[in-house]
Structures are given as C-alpha cells and as structure tokens.
Image (cartoon, rainbow, N blue to C red; front, top):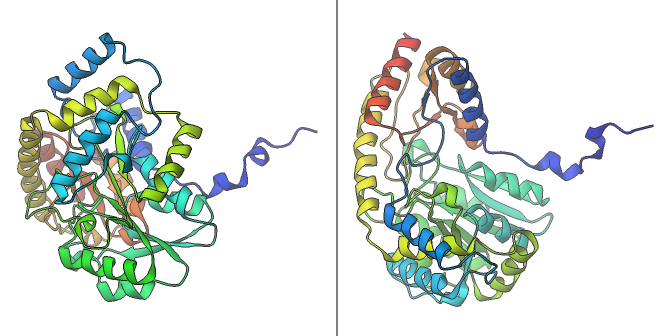
Length: 391
C-alpha cells in the first residue's frame, strides 16, 4: 500500500517556518490578476534600479569570461574590498581571509547557526524580528529564546530583561540594527550590555547589519567595534538593500577565524560558490561612486516622514518614527483588531498589502509592518485607503 505523501516528508520540515511577505505578495498578485488595484507595502525590497555602473561591471565580467567556478569563500579581490569597506564603516581593521561571500545574506545566518549551535542549545534573538532567525533555530533542534523589543523604548530592548534570558545553555545571541521590521536602531549602551554578557559567558554574537547604509538619525554603531568582540562576532551584511540588488543574491559574513573553514565547507556542500561575474559587480558597488545610495536614502527619509505623519492621523493607529531601514511599524491596537485580521481586511477590502506584526514573532501582535519602498504618491494613496476603510 502506498504511503500518504505527507508521511514521506522528513519530520524536521514541520519545524521550518517561512517569510510571510512572499505569501502576502502572492495573494496580492492574485487579486491584481482579477483586475483589482493593490498598493504594495508588504515586500522589503527597494523600488530603485541597481545603479548602472554596477550593471556595466557585471556585463564586462561576463564578456571577460568570468562565468565559471571560483573559490568557495569568494574571489580574493572582493574579499579584500569587503574587508576594507566594512572595516572603514565600523572603525575597525578587518582581515580579508575572514570574509566569506554567499549567494545572499540569509546563508550567513543559516551557516552560522548550523556551524555553531547544537540541538538543545539556546539562541537569543530579537522579537519582533526577521522570521528566519526563529525558523532556523527551531529547524536544527535548538531552543529559540525571544528578546522582546519594546515600543516604549523605540524598539530597543531592556538590558535587565536581556540578562535574565541568558543561561548556561546560551550559545548564540542574534542582534539586528537597523532593524526589520521595526526600523529601530540599537544604541551603543545596548551593544555594551550584550558585549559584556557575551565576553563574560563565552557566547558568540551574530550581528545582522544588512541595513547599515539606510540610517537617518545619528550614526550606525556596530558591536564589532567594541573591544573584545571582533573575535566573537559574526557580521552579516550584503548588497541587496544598500545597492538595490535583491535579485543579485550577494551577501557576506565576517567570521571568527576558526569558523571560516566550517562555513566555507557548508558553502561547498550547498551552493559550491557564489556567481563569479556578480562578484565583480559587487566590487564596483562597494568601491565605486556612492551617489545612488545617498540619493536612495534621502528619498526613503522623505517617504518615512510622509508615512509616519499619515499613520499617526489614522484613528486607532500610533507610529514611532523609524531611525533606519525602510519600514514603519505602527501599533494598531486602538482599532480593536488583531494584526492578522487587519492585514487580511486591508488587502481584501482596501487594496493595501501590509504584513501582520505576528509575521515577525509573537511580540508583533498589535502591530503592522508597512514597507515604504514605494512612491510618495502611492504611500499617500494607501494611507487614504486605510483611513477610508477603517472609517
């Protein structure tokens, strides 16, 4: 007798979560195919084209024959460029041999967890936070320990609450600044608290800084620059957000020396290497003119101000001003609706695609995430549609 196909799937697949943004995007696209208008505020993707100089560098690399396999940790020229650029932005000296290039930034997170964390270990991660953190922690059989980000603290955490979560089983601490989904930015004192605990308890830190270049207020602080942390921090960064290169799949990590060989072997076992010609485009992105990045961030800041002002005028909403990334994370508890309920209603009833705060963890209940990677005109239109629907 043939077995049910559901019984054929490995049990571990039941532990693996997803990224809800793509599910909402699919529902929104289905409505558009039915002839309905939808304003997309759900997907976390810059709506700008990759700068022309980067495209031209990729075309040149293709014409120059950069189409074969290359070293699994990345081509030496790119690793060197990353070490110089990432170190300069964080005020530290970095070694190119500790840089590993991946097809996207998610593999930095995945390979770090696979290489460092055993079944039964505990991993502290931000909640609300990028959903793949919790998904991968559960997938390998470790225990996810959520660190609440508090609205009243501009979506930073309480240091005493953080310390209370640390146990002898804590193997890794994940932080993200600027943050997805809240737009919050960690302050130096927050990072000092994490560093003190990490050093004292021999714990490693995965610092997701993929939005480093999209910051509006103050300057970016990296835990990598705190004395004693450069050998206990895994830096996650990439080109998707800063250079509007989401489809290029280009990310990188800076690892403690002992981890480089292990994450490189994971690269070999899963993807062999990152696309050769695209790495030459990455060199141009990092070392070439940065005018397009500055222009994009200035436009995001204008949109941020429009969306925050508009959300705060909607009855039942209140919204903190994000300091980085391109997301607004309004509290919608005043509407009397749960997050997923309002997400569905706004898509079906108002034609505005948003994400429930619970897509980013249990502490996202009572919130929505709105990406303002859309035009000011569309943002204003979406705000009118939301207000009209609720009234």
